[in-house]
Image (cartoon, rainbow, N blue to C red; front, side):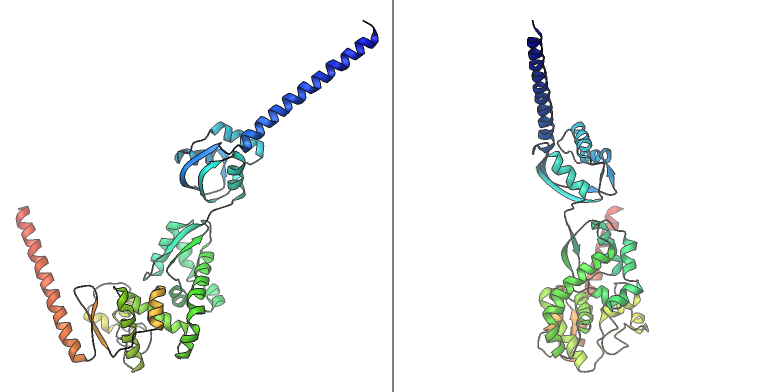
Length: 358
């Protein structure tokens, strides 16, 4: 074999080697890319909330996925995280369902692309229960939420007292991020209040000579009084009748607020000297006693037109409304007789149960 043939053979072998290398490289690269981008790498049959409480490593993420019984290959997930360069995954709540590639799945959690969660705010609660409820639904402590209503600089910034601020915690279901701060939560609810209440009712409220804060304060009393939705405009009208006639509101919920608990009131409770005791103080109390719902606020802005000045509870959970104090006394006696009968029945039942136990 001459030199020319030898060189030609060497070039041929080199070409084959290069082609073989490129083929193996491309096949390996293609295989890896397919594994990283395949849309069936992770399968989640039903919607799951993957919660990462603190910035996590791949091992912690694997523990979370295992606890949720997600269908995937842990070793491939580790390999994919190394290949993609994702070493940590951000705190947050992520809603997942369906099939995912490793690339899409890991980048979502590594970049912190959260999905909002539903935060339910109930009506007729107090700041302590509000704080507990929010802390149960997103990643904040109840102590941190409670401090927002005591933050003098924040209250000065929004120009509201702590009672006025809490009265504007409009009951609703909100979409928020799981990592929202307490102030972000409060500001989000305030924006909704401004949209649903201030923007909707301000003109009519101003025409009546009142303010939004007056309405919210009265609505907070109606919220605690009304057990039946249909009675809200009637109760609102009753209290506005008293207010407009210069009568004391004499609203039991304000006394409950003053004594610090919702319970059956005692005679001495009505004598408790407190700015919120409307049995002793005329006009509206200094601020709301709770957070009224939108329907209660609307019923307070647009009360029923009637002459009622008095009401007393009835056995159905509602009220009997009357125009004169004499009528009120008659209905009140009926209610007391009914209560006494219920106590008698209860004592008799307890006595019979004790005898049967013996």
